[in-house]
Amino acid sequence: MYKFITVIIRILIAVPAMVITWLVSFFGLELSFWYASLTALAGAVLTFWIVSVYLHFRFLKKNQLNMKEYRYIRKNLAEAHQKIRRMQKSLLSIRHMIFLKEIIELLRMIRKIYQITKKEPRRFYLGEKFYFSHLDSAVELTEKYALLSSQPKNIEVGQVLRETQYTIKGMKETIENDLYHILSNDIEQLHFELDFVNRTTKQNK
Image 1: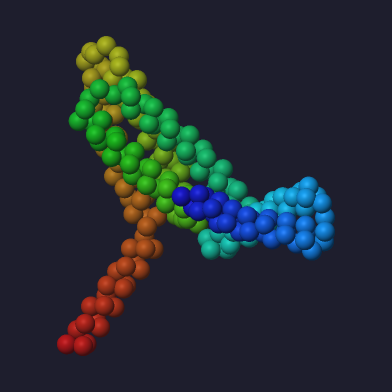
Image 2 (image 1 turned 90 degrees about the vertical axis):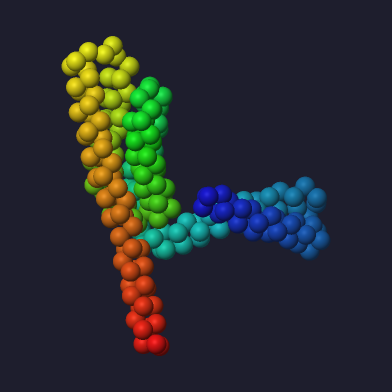
């Protein structure tokens, strides 16, 4: 959504810049129609690029990141996106509807963490355990469960499936804690504001 909005902003600025450049080139500098059009196009491209750079550095400043940090986070987010797609793909092989719902809830939390971090990259550092350990475990466990659940059933396979289910449930709690930790600053801020409102209300009474 952020990328879409920034593209719209860049277009809304570049188009008027192109029109003004063409008018100045054609009427003010008395260039030919084609030269004025070429100059206007170059002006639009330059304006689009300048606005893109400005918005990008504004985004980095807002998130208190430098270019090196942002590239590092973006690289890890790209890898996380591929892992999430692997997990989504493995869901198609699971036929146990009750446990499928459990894994879908786990995937929903994982996607929530990913979307929050993508929107506010600075939060990546609060979710390093998730990105470097817990996400990998969740994907591997889901793929393992999907593979085993498609095999002919016997006592050994059934036991491993039950153990995997139990482990995935534990992983769900772990990732829920990851989500809570990533949002911890917001939660603390909310508690502070609620305490302030409560104290103010009591004083007024």
